[in-house]
Image 1: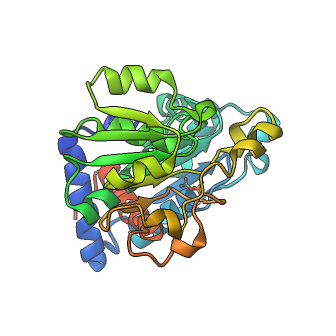
Image 2: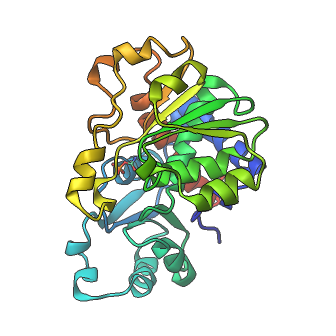
Image 3: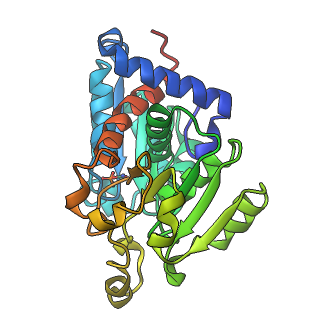
Length: 305
Ligand code: CP
C-alpha cells in the first residue's frame, strides 16, 4: 500500500507516468468515468479549503466513486480530543482512500502510519502540499512542454508558503532549473530549504526583493498569498500583505510567453486586471488539479483502466 505524504514520494519516472495519465484523463474523460465504481474517498479536513477538498471530491466523483468526510475539525471528534491515529483507524473502516489536511506538520504522516488505506497529505501546516505540487507540475508540463532549463520566480510568502517548499523539492530533480526567490526579508525562504535543498543540489538561485527586477528573465512566475493564518501577530501580517501586487503595468516587463501560476486563493497579490491576460493561467491550474488528483487516486488504489 502506498501513501502520498511528500512531493518526493514519486520518483521522476513515476511522476512522468502520473502526468501522462492525467493528460489522458483530460483528453478521454469518459474512459475513466466508472474506474472507481464502488470505491469511497474520505476527505478529512481539519483546516479550511476550497480547491483541494472539492477537487478531490470532484476527482472521485468523476471516476464513478463516492465521497464522505468532514471539512472542519470542530465538526469531527477531534473537538472531543480524538487523536489523528485513532481517527484514521476508524476512517480506514469506512473508506478506501483518505485525503487529509491538518494544521500540524506531520499529522498526515502519523495518519499514514496507522492507516490500512492509502493516505494523501492535502497540506500539513507550513510544511508541504504535495498534491498542489502535482497540480503545478501538470500545469507547467502541459503548457510549457518540459521542466528542464526553466527559470522560475517564486514570489511572496516564501517562509510559510508550503506550496513553494513542495514545488522547489520537486523541481530540483530536473536539468538546469533556476530559481529567483522574490520576497521581503521577513518572508525569505527558510534556510532548511535554501541550504538543504537548493545548495545541496547545486541549484542556481538568487534572492531579490523587487518583483520588477526579476520579471524580465522569468519563464514561470509563481505568485503566493501572504499566509495570514501562520503569523503570530496581526500587525506583521498587515505590514506584509500588500508587499507585492502583480498588475497590468508590471506584466509589461514580463516575457510574452511567461506563465503566471498561483495555487489560490489570492487576496490582493494579483490584480484582477490581468485575469484576461493569456499568460495568467491560475484558473486553468485549478482545473489541472482535478485531472492530476484523478490520476493520483487511480494510482494509489492501483486501478488500471
Ligand atoms: N491551493 C489550495 O490549497 O487551495 P485551498 O486552500 O482552497 O484548498
